[in-house]
Length: 136
Image (tube, rainbow, N blue to C red; front, side, top):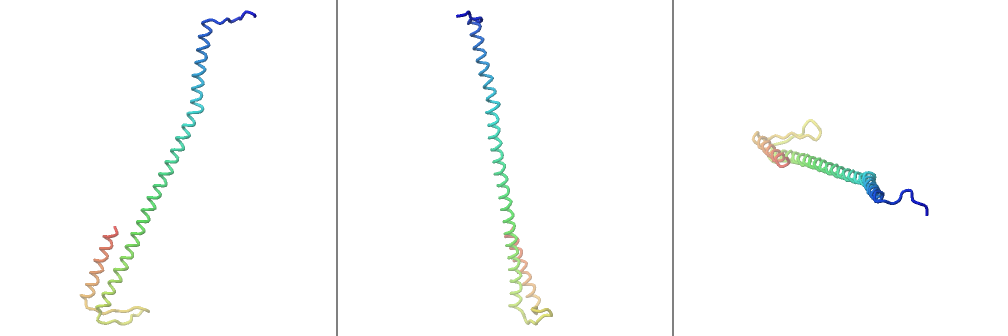
């Protein structure tokens, strides 16, 4: 066997061990920066996107519920106001002295004492106040 131009020595063994360790550390850094870090960033981005979508959905649901509540409140107030108007005219019709047809088709003119009109107006006002108080 020919003589080895680089016979194994203690220095060569140490150098080989150091080169191997350096290669392992370098490969570890490369693996971390090329594989682990991008995967982690992608997972964080997906989580943030999911969180954003959930927050957006929650805001939309809250907005829809607020609009529905507002619409329901508006409808309740409108129905209550219509009921107050009906009550007003019912009171007038029940306590009238006389009535006659008006100038317009379907119109009726009611004649009643002033205190009947005032009482009907007062009841209507109280009913409307109750409507607005209950539906705030």
